[in-house]
Image 1 (cartoon, helix red, strand yellow):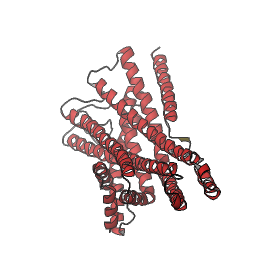
Image 2 (cartoon, rainbow, N blue to C red; image 1 turned 60 degrees about the horizontal axis):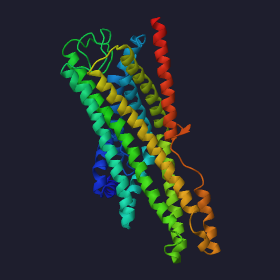
Image 3 (tube, helix red, strand yellow; image 1 turned 180 degrees about the vertical axis):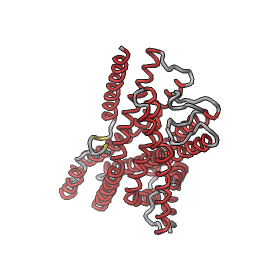
Length: 411
């Protein structure tokens, strides 16, 4: 039964600042069968696996394969290619996220119980305020993430129903009424009821994509901000280790070392789960950023494909994509900074006021905290703002390549 796991996570959501974020994120992952749960029965585990498989199969068969088929047909037209990639790449990354998260969810499940324990065992008001502050940030990120994705779904699905498509249309990709996503099917979608059925299937599939796309990302931010709060609490305990309750110095130091080791193991699990996902997102973001940059430069310099209705949509998509990738790097930077602060908290401890035995006990924590910890992108480079800036430089270089290729093709 899931009783103990549900109670554990209800304990994590006991704080009103955390509750809605937790429920929303949990519902989205449960809906597609990806919620980590270490106490499921065999039957419920199979049902979750079946839901995840059906969602993946739906995304693959309804959008990804038809979109790739359409991409092969229009590969010579760069504007149509960009129109295709803006939907094909996110859908393809959703499949990768589902597969990787499903594979790693058993390793993540104990972290949920750890979060519940942290919320239930907190005693000091200062520690509680630290956790509430981090929970507020996570809640805002989760709510804004879902709002942005739902607004994108409305623009992509509802506006074509009203005759206002935000896509780049042509007679090759849309001989009849436009669909939300540029696709090519083996049957005629210009006739009724094939068009209405296909339109509905694409709308449902795009809604299903929101669940793993935003749910898994927000789950990462939720974990990182909770770990960041625990590191902040640990930092405060280490700073005052030699001044508060000297009589219980050994027990306090032992507790700090245990908590630090626990948090490092948690970070290692999170990094192992998300490093491939982050690598895929970096490649996806770099490609789309270069493509959107090319479209914007093309519109502003030559006035081609300029539309007052398309420009706000394009700017909102670029801002959304930019914000998501920037958020990942900010979260990674915060985590690295918090880990470094632990080392300085131990190093700057007033060890000279302690006796020699207690002072020697600080050597091991200093050695343990000497190494910086980062979330890695595919175990290649750290997830920091410096990495994000380098990615922007690389994407900007590809924009110039695309513009040069266009100019050469014209001449």
